[in-house]
Amino acid sequence: LKKSHFIAAEETVSGSCATFQALLRVLVEQNKVAICAFARATRAAFRYVALIPQLAPRELRGGAASSEAVARLDPPEGFHVFYLPFRDDRRHPERMVAPRARPFPRADEEKIDAARRVVDAIRLTKWHPNQIPNPALQTHYRVLEMCALERNVMEPVHDDTEPNYEEWERVNVPALLTDYEQKCFAEARLFEELAGAGDDASGAPRLAGQKRKAIAAPSGKRVTMEASTIAPEYNYIIDKVKTDALSALTNDALKNYCAAHGLS
Image (cartoon, rainbow, N blue to C red; front, side, top):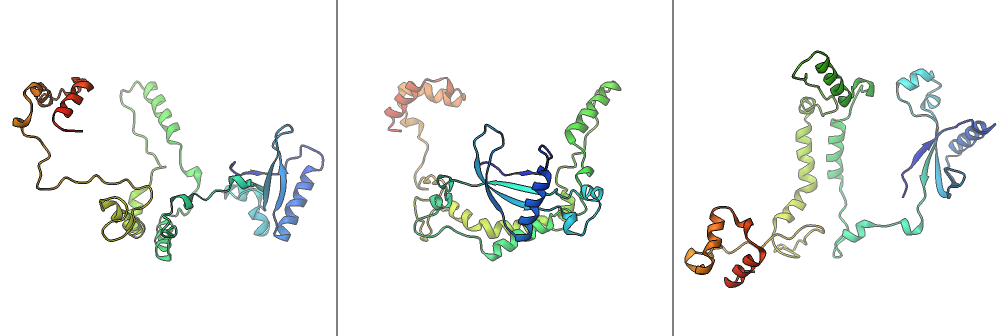
């Protein structure tokens, strides 16, 4: 599916802005959306779309000045264009990964509340993008300054786009993240720690997409082979292993060694 975009009124044809504004306000008053055929160019194929109307917030609040609306980054008025899917585009990937024995897991209220606490804690207040300088542009200026002043070391550039970890500590974000992780992923990590294929000993099925763990060798058996069990004609391979030069051997030589010692 194509991603949605936004369109605003533009006086390309006489009376087009008036028609645009009339349709916008009628849809807002009747609380409806417009389903129509949309083509971005004259020769382009049309697609069925839904036009979601949006009024400027200054009109909803009683008509503030346009300069104040721009300073607050208020969105303009116009239509959000959402491309409607065809029947073949509608898919349900959750049905493919969900186990057949039980329905697809859903987040309960406890997990949702844990996520909500994290989002509320890191929410930005009194923030404007004009307060954040471009770190790439600042680095460019520092390089020009270093060349102009004939310096050998560039002054460090502070990247204000990085998270403020000190502020996160103050509002207890790390503890909230740990609590969210425990509530949402503790069960999945428990399944990952259980070895074996399919269901484990407790009867809990292995989650879809998880890799099977390799079966550990029994503690009573030794995995490495004693030097006395190596055939004499393959002692040169042991020398290569000791000198960390095993990569110099060919695949045929390694295959012959494994076949002679019952290794696969």
